[in-house]
Amino acid sequence: MNINDSIKKALNKIQEVFPKTTVSYQYKSISDTHFIHVLPAKIYESAAFIDLEFALLEEFEKCNVGGSFCFITVDSLVELDNPSIVLVPKIKETSNSYRAFFEISGATVSPQISNQTIEMVQLHSDYPTIIDAGNKKTAMAA
Amino acid sequence: MSFLLEKSKQNKAAFALLTGLDHYASAVHCGYYCCIQKIIYILKEYYTDEYEAGLAGLKGGHGNRHKFYIEEFAGRFSKDIGERRRLKNLLTELKHCRIEADYHDVQVTDSRIKKVKSYLEEILRLIRKNLGL
Image (tube, rainbow over all chains, first blue to last red; front, side, top):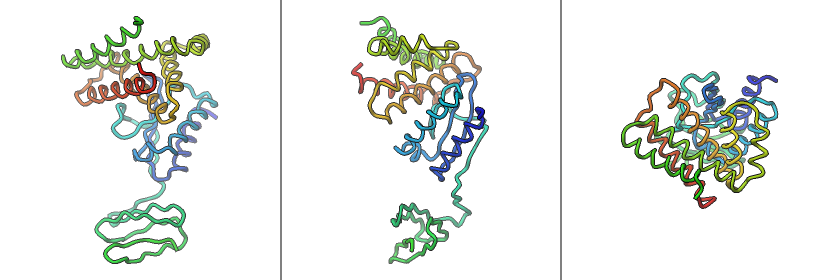
């Protein structure tokens, strides 16, 4: 596997594990550094992402990719002015009508609702339903 | 006190002085070397065998030496994986910024020097917290 393949594989792995991330990559030759920019910062800072980062670094080492690797996020000192790879989130938060966003872990649903209106629901359940709980609307996986 | 630690202290003072004079590129240089000198001191003093074996096995140029200092130190200075990761990424970014400031036709802006200052303070805080230096 060549260097580019190793990098692409790593970036795809990030999105596989964290589908809501935007991942950008740029190699900066002046410092021989591979920069991987990860958004949102909340994921970048999570323990699960840090574990994945270390696992990827080990992979790079095994594949003899060379250079330094640096994972960065919003407000970092280094900015990517010309990324060669950008992967956008695989879970699409579509259209202007998107107002509800759900985090689902097993059977638990934690909605963040704006304007008290749900116009689009993207659930990882086969049969999601929406119920009106007074002024607040809540989604539940059936 | 070790000469290397003294140089690190002087570079920290130079960072503040040069920032005050708006000599930002030179300030970045001093800020980075303040960190690297402290790290080399700790590696030589506390991880002597690993440091010497690592240096002996190094291939490539000067850049690889700095990569070695950063990765070797960041990999050892704390038991906390989050802190190890944080320090490595902060130092790697600062290294890149230093090279850009020293050798490239790039302006070091007000906002950038503020970030460099916050990186420098955070790096030194992490070292102090874990090693008391």
